[in-house]
Length: 426
Image 1 (spheres, rainbow, N blue to C red):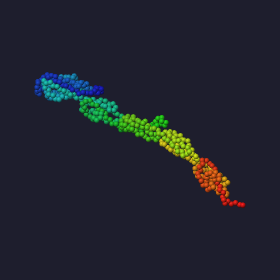
Image 2: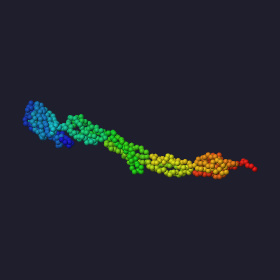
Image 3: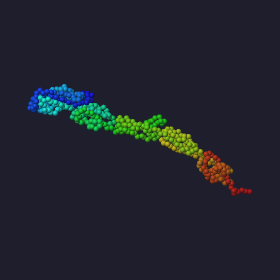
Image 4: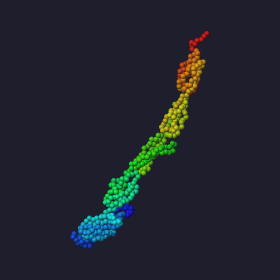
């Protein structure tokens, strides 16, 4: 019997026992006259025009028992047979269908019948199938091995089919896709028809999936993989990846593939993309020239601007320094200045002594210096012009009269005031 035969559906076979005629008999039943017999015509038929069952029968065995009679057995292969049955009470007809190996595959038994000689009697026996085909459905798992199994009524199912499903734990065979009863190897067969058993699965909670993070390349030509996360979750559930914080980048939800269903084989890969941000360097020159801001993508090479200018000062750089590449935030850079120093000549005129020159620092007090002397005159300070003209930078005691505010060197002139009590000889 092949596996294909097992796939065919079975039907309940009905065997009709019909009394065709009576050889001996009297019209009234006499329980003491057991020697009388009736010829019983046995005819096998299948109701509803159904096909012969897949578990084929090759012969019938009819056993007749009753009170005060020896059991009678008749074997036949045709659809009908006529046998002689002693009249009497409680005659029981047991009909069995056997396969090629002599195994009983269908069996039926009549109710006890009081068989009277000379009376026609109709007897119907319902044959019950004893061997059934169980089909296994994997419900998403691998092809069951075997796909079909023959079981025997009132016996254990025995070893059931093997199946597996990546990402799931097998929870046994059940009589329904959901609900129903679980069937194990030790379960006793109580079915009266062929049966389908369904695999039941529980999703694993540690199925692997991957999240990849991509950062935009400089120049916007594409993306490069920055980081890979190996994660796990429940098979066939929806997951959404969490975006990371990368300095200089912003998460691009529109381009990213952040959500998906965890594949049983661990093949789910979620891809998150991050755009490269642009930032601005603002320059505060505090000088006589302004410096334009620089706006560029994060990480791009920054070219320092031309140095600003400021009268009386030398530019010494930016605070903080201009970065080699654009940082991950807007920045403000302030110019650093160093005041220039100049040589200032001190013209003493008719006087003598004191300093002949000083080094003046722009926008700073005039440096200390010694005053000159001139007999008969009082020193009145140094000025930008002779005889006390112009702007005074030193007082009469050589204190600073004002900060040096010229972006160059210059000459200051001593002012002399004639004394009124100067002695003289006649």
